[in-house]
Length: 148
Image (tube, rainbow, N blue to C red; front, side, top):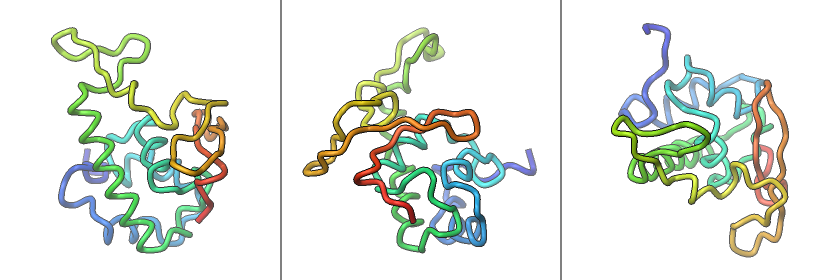
């Protein structure tokens, strides 16, 4: 447990901490966000959604994010998680809450699982694409999510 990074909704996960952890890293930002040593508890779905909201391509080199992009991404991570919690999580396959209720955040997905569908950002006109990174699916819009 001592090697885990801070919780994404805790005070220790902030733009300054995040920028420091990303500095000099060449790994894709998607991989960095799934690295539990950097931030604990982020899952694939919520990473895809936060990157889409921030307009950052999942293949971007982690260390290439500037402080403003890091701050923007931290904010979107927090927003996505807060909305997911409010909606009871994402019920895909067999996920249910402790009381057996389904979550409903999957109805708000803008990127995850939407391969081939139009990007939902106003004025974008792009299409959601799926790539595989480290054995995980990444869904993003190549038109409005740019490499850092």
